[in-house]
Length: 276
Image 1 (cartoon, rainbow, N blue to C red):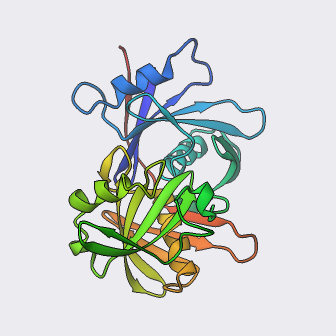
Image 2 (image 1 turned 180 degrees about the vertical axis):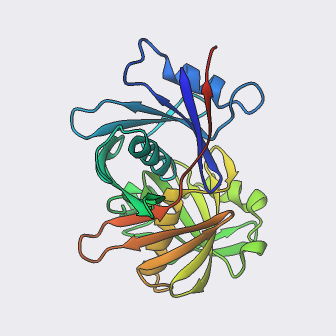
C-alpha cells in the first residue's frame, strides 16, 4: 500500500488512503509503521476513509495501536493530502473525526497551499468534564509539585490539557515536572501538560509534555487549549500566535460562535510503498 509521510512543525504522521483497502488491521499496522527503527517512523498513523456524514473520514491511531479521537496537527496534514490529491473539491470541506464533524479550509498563496485552517469546535471548561478534581472551572488554580508551585488552568480539547504558566520556557524543566503533573492525583485521566510563557497580549511560547508520550515538538490541541486558558486568565487577547519548537501556530477563539480556529502549516516529506 502506498503511504505518505507528513509533518506539521515536527509532529509527524504516516497517512494511508484506506478507501479501497480490504481487511486491513489498521491498529496492528500502526505499530509496525510508526516504529522509528524498523518502520517508517511517526508520532501516529492517519487513515483516510469514506464518510456518510462528511466529505471524508479520518482515523487517528497511536504507535501502540490505540485510537485517539483527534490530532490537532494530524488533521492539517490529512486535509492538505485530501485537497492536493483531489479527494475533495474546493478549499473548504468537512472531516468526520472521533469528536464529530470538523471543517477544514486550505489557505492558498499564488495558487499553492500556504497553510490549513481548522474549526476545532468549542473548548470544554467544566472541571468535571476535563476532568480535574476541583469545583466549577480549573482556571487560575495553584498546584504544588515537589516544593515548586505552578499557576495552572485545565481545558479539554479531545483530551485533558493542563496549561502551566512559567516566567521562562527555558526554566520549565519538562522532563522533571511534565510526568509529575501528568500523573498528579488531581487529574483522574492524567493530563497533557502545556508549559506556557506569555510574551505579549498576542503571542505566547509553548512546550508540551503529552500524557503517555513525553515531550513532543508540536501539539495542535495543546495550542488551542493554551490560547483559551490565556484568554480566560486575562493574560492575552482571544487571538494569539503560539510559538512552538519549530514554528508558529495561530489560534483564534471566536466571540461570535465560541469556536476555536487553528491555523498552521502541513508538509509532505516523502511517499513510499509499504510491502510488509
